[in-house]
Length: 111
Image (cartoon, rainbow, N blue to C red; front, side, top):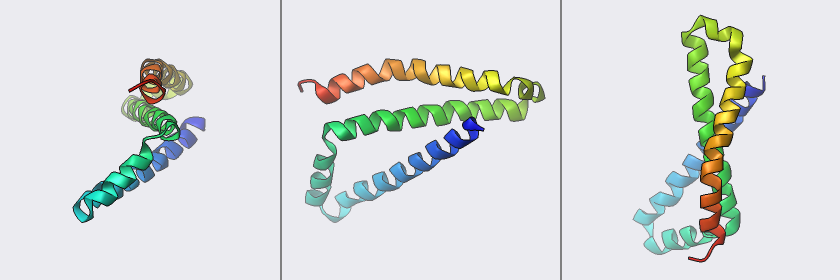
């Protein structure tokens, strides 16, 4: 059940990010000054932490999507769904452990 819930939450979060991304990027056609002002508001530590959450959501959504494909394609995988879920969680942790320190160093470090 948690896999289903987290997959839906991450999907909705990614959808809303993409919606905002398309809208703020389209500002460049309307007014480059407005675009620059919006982009400038994103350059703060809170948004940097939000980017970590966004990347985590994308990584989880992708890995869990592969798990769902495996379960749909291979009937034997239905017997090990719980193990596959924990494999997904482990992969997300490993991948985020590689990304998060580097990203946070860029966010909070000297530029």
